[in-house]
Image (cartoon, rainbow, N blue to C red; front, side, top):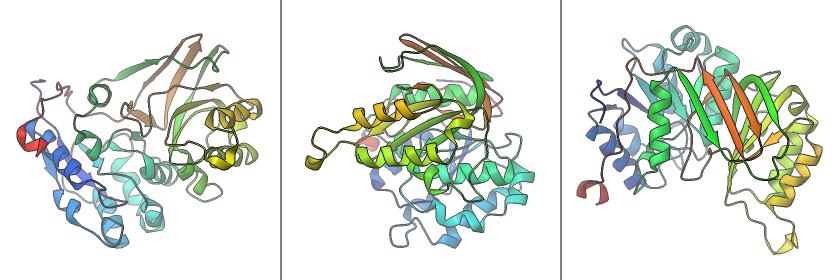
Length: 326
């Protein structure tokens, strides 16, 4: 385990209540085992219908980051679900820009958290991180890959991520651009709004969960016809989890939907990125320049300048204790 001082972690619950409260509590315990101070644990018990508190409470959690006397070392979302989009008009973007711009605080989450990442980048210039949330750390057992990539990305000034793309990603690619993206449905839900970033020559990464193949294709067409894709250097596909077709699809499946997308997409498409709702996920910045190189069975993404911890902290994955399993 790292001998560096363990970070102070502030929990954010901008979306749904934990689907698995036990996993959330195990996540807290696992972080505390490392010596981390975990703040705002009470948000785990907050509930208003399906949401982790009222809209006012959840928006106040984000706005409070601009007024804290001392910032934590990182702010970690509890889970996704639904609800972050309801908060966007209630955020104090000027105050958040003044306090958080320049990587002062790593904000980390994915899925529904994509809405906040888009809005904060567009309205405040805040760069955040797409990565695991509290409930991922409470998985039994958690992913060693996810654990390692999370702490190493938060600790290292320059990061390299390698993976093996599928055979469909046949063309060689070498390009550089602003890395951004996240959940496909959340991106499309904000298209045409003041919270959708205008990024040219970008590297757009995408993932989703629980969408039928035709809905995935329809969402991708939204990005295509709106002109977003033509302004990018490349599209990088992550995990599309639980996106199987049904009996009415008559052989049409996710592979066919993505193949149709490749035929229409005006820029290279590289797949296999370890990111999304699968067990293994990388931690990726939203809003810094990155370089993508792909050829054959190897893809490499390199980036720097992302929000990091004040002190490096790269702990080994602790063994599960009886209290965590209970």
